[in-house]
Image 1 (cartoon, rainbow, N blue to C red):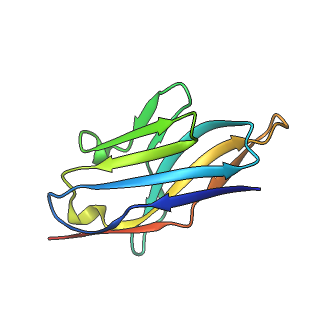
Image 2: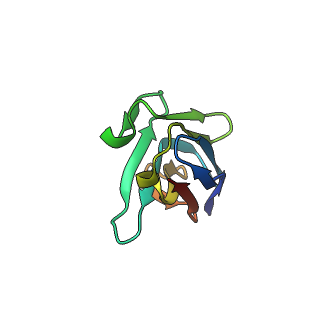
Length: 120
């Protein structure tokens, strides 16, 4: 059993910053990719940023230069630092991780989601 627990989020004015954190716990052999997705009202869930265990990162074009993803492999945590926030960043943000339980197969896990609201 694996759980992803998110923290952070909230309400911020445009131009402000927020930091999201996510911790994976449970039966974990290795954590491959960790990332953040978001789903705005009436929209599908889209990738915001991801990071591999070796540190390779990937960002959605809309957040490049404003958001930074980082992880601590020893603690199985991933953070998303969000700067220069815009109203269009308003969404529920979900942590995602590909985790192996030692069977050689990676399974995808999701956090419960955390609301980020940016006011204009």
